Image (cartoon, rainbow, N blue to C red; front, side, top):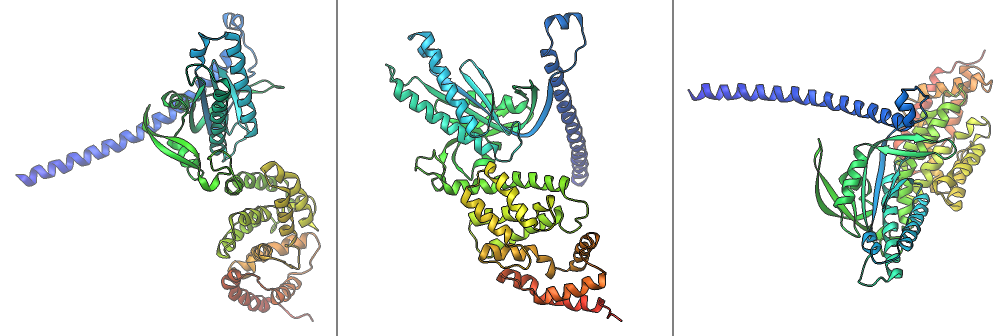
Length: 470
């Protein structure tokens, strides 16, 4: 009897598990349909808002002037100025409005500094978003830095105001990271209206925070926790997603703070930030290479650049270089062949020209750019590196000499040179390869340990392919 009951329980559990799996599948389908409908609804609302009452009444068809964009990762900030209502009943209202305008003007300067997009002000609430209109992976860090400066500015305003009865001016900040839908209007002066769950969640977080607090969602926390001291704040219920953890930002971590107050980033912060920002720079350069490199570059293509960037990181960590050296090295690897866009011969020099033009936009100092250009020029053949970073990039650039895929890779280089009439027959190429590899040496201990043995095998393999001239 017990065995029979046990079997029935097993059957019921199995049936429930199957039903649960099916429900989860249907729920996922419904969620996708809901998101699609929400997106379409936002587009229609934007169109409706662009019509005049007369056009709506007559049902007149007009050309849509609102563009709708989707950003997969934006960081939305709501800042609510506290104390406005307390002051308005005791002080000249125009003076209060003027002071609020001054505060918002300072906020505009802060968000501009961090390349954050101001969305709008609603009464005494300021709204902005990072990652719009230019997508980037660093926007959560930038928005939190802006929030810290906003809070610091309000503290300064309060000290200067010295209003009777104690503290009046204060600020509450709420931040959340996620996808947003942006309705874009205007040509000369472009404005963005953002909507979606991310915006709603950021607003609710701001409402839940207390005076003087910067409260962030767990999504933002995971993206900024390496840089900032954060304390657990509590949970907030989110529709369809359960409870969401929230954290209070206390300031920069001591190792990243210039002034010891957790407000001003130092050089260590800038380097770590640069390593994250490198992802955005890499995406821009690889896209540029994909679109602009000549079609005959079968070897010096996007894949080769990615290989060199990957290899300098591998060798660099093994050789014990610093974070800043890694940033300089990876950047040099990214640009070392970009000069092929301009000219095949002397492409290293043209790579430095492009680097000098682009890198200041990403916060690289003149001294860093000079070092990056020196590293790029070290890849000219024959390689003559003068220091460890140049040793590493030279080894990474010719890493294929000691890899098992040497033959197919070297054949792509032959094809590239042959189509430009820079090399004759394949037999001539093989002779040249043997000569080059025989005279080549890896400069770093890491590359010698990884590749030197295989490199000697390549000489034997190619030698067998060579036929003697009659």
